[in-house]
Structure formats: C-alpha cells, structure tokens
Image: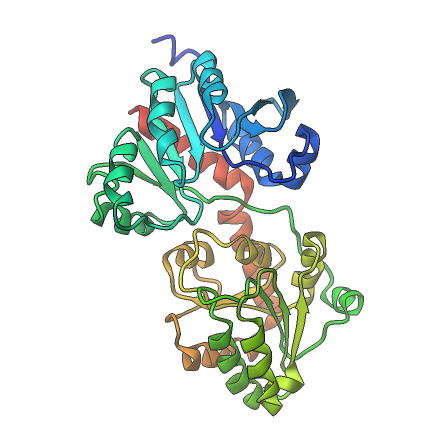
Amino acid sequence: MSARQSRPLRVVQVSLHADPLRRGARALLAAWPTLSNVAAAASRAGVEVTVVQTAAAREVLSREDVDFHFVPGAHREWTRVYDMVSALSPDVVHTQGLSFPRAMRALARAARGAPVLAQDRGNTLPVGWRVPAWRFAHSALGGVAFTSQEQAEPWKRSRIFRSDLPVFEVLGGSTTFAPGNQADAQREMGMYGDPCVLWCGRLDANKDPLAMLDAVEVAATALPDLALWCCFGDAPLEAAVRARIAASVVLTRCVTLLGTRPHAELEMRCRAADLFVQTSHKEGGSFALIEALACGVTPIVTDIPSARRIVGQVGSLTPVGDSAALAAAIIDFAARDRVALRVRARAHFEHSLTYDTIGFELRAAYEGLLQ
C-alpha cells in the first residue's frame, strides 16, 4: 500500500473570487455558506479538505474538520494563494470557476504534479482573441466539473478543453431549506393563488421573463385563481416587464412584482408556492431551482442541461422560448395531486441534491482524477 493509499485523500479547494465588501473570515463564511457547506460535505465523504480563499486579511478558521485559510490577494495578484497551495502538498487541487485562466497554470505549478479540477460556475465561453489564450491556460487542467456533463461540450468544440479532458458531474451547491406548512407560509408571506406560482430570478434576456409572462397569461385564462409572485434582483428588463403586465388585464390581475427580497425570506416563499417557474436559456446550476425543490415545490422550467440534471423526473421541462408548452405544463401540474407532488419533489431533493450528494460526487471526481 502506498503512502497516499494509507491516508485520506488530501484536497485543497481554492476560491479566487474576491469579496467586494472585504469582510472578515467569519462574516464571509456566513455570507457565502456554500463555501463551507461544500467543504464540510466532502470531509464527511472521507476527504481531508482544506480551503484557501482570497480575502482582505490573513486569517485561519476551523469548522467541521475543515481548515479555512483566508489569504490576502487582489485580482491577478495571487502569489500568496499559490504559495499556500504548494505548502499544503495536496493530492488534488479543486478551484472554483473557469473565469481565471491565468491562474490555472499557476495552480498546476503550485500543485507540483497533483491534478487540478476546475468547477464551472455558469461561466461564459470566451470569443475572439481570448480563445487561444484560454486554450493554452486550460491545457494544464486535470479535469473539469459541471452540473451536467453536456455543459462541457461547447468548451470542447471550441478546443478550450482538450477532447480527452475528464468531465465530472458535480452540483455547484445545495441548500438547507426545508418544507413547512404551506398555509402558514402563505399567511406569513401574504401569498395566495390556485395555483400559487413563484418566480425567483433576474429580469434579463437570459432568464426571459417576457416568455414567462406570455405563458402565465395563457395559463391564467384557464386558471382564473392563479397568482404569480416574482422575486428578482438585477432587472434590466423591468420596464418591459411592467409594460407587458400593464397591457394585459389577465396579468394585471394575477402578477405581483415583489422585487428584491432577503434570501432568508425565500425559504418561506418557497413553502408557500405550488409551482416554481423558470424560463432560462442557460444556467450553470440554478440555486433557486434547488431551493424550490428542497421545499417541495414542483418545477416548471426550460429544458436545458443543468435543469435536466436537477429536475430529474419530478417536474416539467419545456423547450426554451416555448410559452405555449410552458402554459400547458402549468395547467397540467395545477390539476395534479399537490400533496403528492410536494412529497415527490422533496424526496428527489433528499436523494439527489443535498450537500452530502455533493460530497460523494466530489470524492468520486477526486478519485477519478488520480486514476
């Protein structure tokens, strides 16, 4: 038995994403719970995990058998991060995001022969002169992780990834949201509807809220008590959305724009809903969709690779931009046994979408790289 086989797999998870608020270590972990929850899940799966996170100041914390090293480093100035990675002598380096091409080769050097796994965070393919630069940078990778393996295909077609680069399916995150009493949640949130439909997402071209409104208008004609509740952050299409609602008697009656809501409030709003709608053209891996399923909400979403992986068999997947199909799905699922739907959605979450699921997926990816 080799020395490596006689001890747990040693992995360094690296995050180069800078905190614009420059918070301290404890505040940052509270604000970014996925960072610590994913690391803890991999630890529970039998991996020795250390996290290296860029930060405003040097700090070290330990939580759930995971050491967190907060290392000062501004954009593209990550020498101390690389030094820390090298000092930790990892078997595998796992870095978040594909948007730091210059760091990939530096991390590979710091890893001193250990493979580097880069995980997609909904990153966009480069174009023009960036393509050969990114191709060179990513040639140092040992593997990549996406919510769905299918998401790697455009990267391989562009030859940013070599054709034989291993691709692993790993969820980007999960949630601690849980089901609750729907009637209580509706009273607390002031939500209602038959069905009660929830939207959580930006009002932009990729999320396509106008296609969603077209579908809801048709569905609400057949379901006069339908109510749609829209939570959103960035909203470049807000004026167009408001104009579309104002031009329709049906939408004016049934749509409420809630705007930006505290994240902690979204659990109660998910508990209040019957259906969750999403009309995205692409998603790295929708946290909002996972949160809805955790609360037992049935998803009515577009048929894109990440959604196929997340939804499984417990909701509806409709073609992108097909408002008629989306409307038909809303009408169909509104007529089904909603108690049974809630039980099924939550069971799917517990089986396929928890943090422990991520931990086992990560361990399989790490071991796959070393094989």
